[in-house]
Length: 158
Figure (cartoon, rainbow, N blue to C red):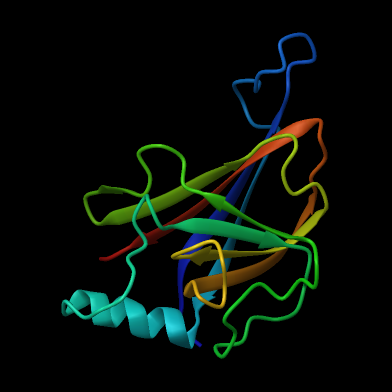
């Protein structure tokens, strides 16, 4: 299994009076992931101009779920049975600076309020039609309506 890139979760409390995110996260987590077969194949196809949907702003989604099942290269979706949510990219993402590409989605106070154990990057919001590029597993904690979490996926080409 080829591991590449980093998933990150930034956890922000909401200001009780304004309802806005406080400027500094109260916790930041990082964990590795692995490309899955279908995502790796599509990534290579896109490098040579092959067919398929890109992971651009109009198509890319970060999904989170509550399954702690280990990553396997044959997986095509989050492993959670019911607690899974797919969020579209924030404005201006994905972005590339130098040789680093970053995807980012914000899960607001009403989104995905359950234990987060898995995260993945997709080129659509409806697997299995959408292709999952990579998936990571980590006990990230339980998100509640008292906060918003920002999920980021970053890859770098040396």
